[in-house]
Image (cartoon, rainbow, N blue to C red; front, side):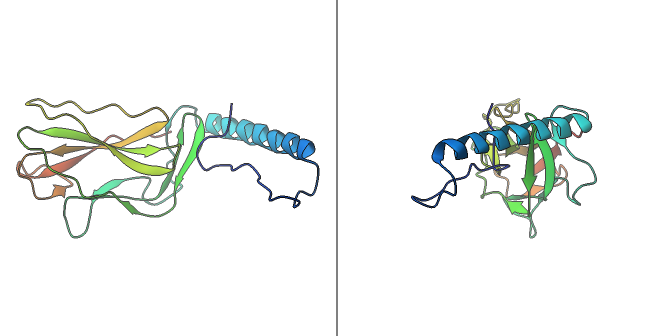
Length: 173
C-alpha cells in the first residue's frame, strides 16, 4: 500500500546527486514509506479509527461557511482529518469557485475534502423536484451539502426559503 495525498513525497534526486546507489536509496525510501504508513495507521487508531475530523486541533475544524460578503461561494476553514486511514490537512481558509444556480429544480451539491490532491472539491448533484445529495468520492470526506435553488443569488448559513444554504455533514473522530 502506498502513502496517499501529500503526507509523504518519495525522494527524487537529479543525476549524479545521489549520496548512495539507486538500489540502496530505493530500499531506504520504501522503508520510510512503510514506517510512515504504520505511524499513520496507529495515529488513526488512537483517535478511534475510521474517517473524520479531529476535534480541537484547529479552530475551524473544516467548517463550511458563507463567504464575506455573501455570494455564490463558500469558505472552508483550516483543519485536520483522517480519510481512509491517512492524514489530511487544510492549512488555510479556502474558497470554492463561484457556483451556478440550478435552472429549473433544486439541486444538492457536496463539499468534500479530497485526500489524493489535498484540496476541497465540489461534487455537483442532479436537479430534481426532490433532490438527493451525491455521495463522497473514494478517498474523500464529506464536509457539507449545499442546497441550491433556481434563481438564488447567494449561499447562506441558514434556510431563508429563497437562497441556497449550507447543511453541515462533517463527521468527527
